Length: 87
Image 1 (tube, rainbow, N blue to C red):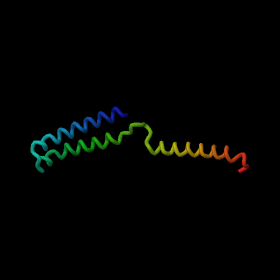
Image 2 (cartoon, one colour):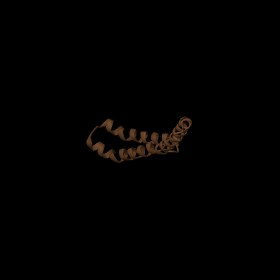
Image 3 (tube, rainbow, N blue to C red):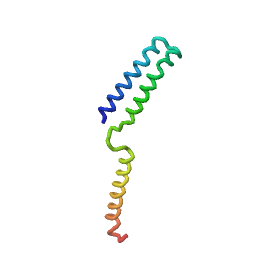
Image 4 (cartoon, rainbow, N blue to C red):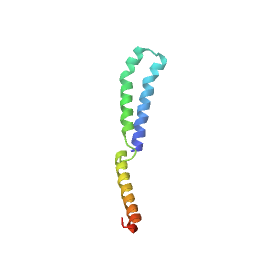
């Protein structure tokens, strides 16, 4: 998944470079207007590429799993510590 994301980002960067080349030569609003569709396409491609997860599991799922595991460990440790006192 990381390889796909990196290749998509590479394509987006290449589109950005292509779109900005005429702007570097003649930095006018007319040139910017002419390059708008290419810049929009590069921006959309970059956003989609950045949305590709590096891991197959998203951060919210990892947070839930960590919370559950931490809770189970905390309850187990509490039972082991409090059991000798009859609590």
